[in-house]
Image (cartoon, rainbow, N blue to C red; front, top):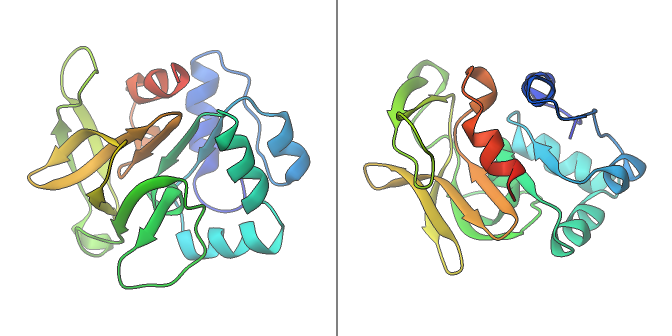
Length: 181
């Protein structure tokens, strides 16, 4: 999804994996893709644009039909059914509640080694930038990674919600997990 945010980095990573990926900005583009990445950026702005351009319903419909969606950072917020302490347009696809900027402001951004359920190999080097967290993950959501008690990666069927930015690393295992959906 190329409405706002760091979509170009996702396109680059998918291209390195041999995936034919292109920026999606409208209903026609969404109808052509087999899977969708909703990037980091500003979730309120993206939610407003999704609503204004009539894209919320087509994304919801495609997700219900089984289209895989990866939401990173702001994309994770948009996938949630609820966001704490703020009203904003959401896709409302995952049975999660999210807290925006849960680790603090921009200056509180960090990297860490993250053990991820189902990922082979060493811990994933995760980049967190003004990152949200999942505060409630209700069934059928499967929690895949936490930092202390904070959920930072979860899956529900064909949906993958990621609090960090896998596109900012050379490690493509999160994308492979997503493409496996």
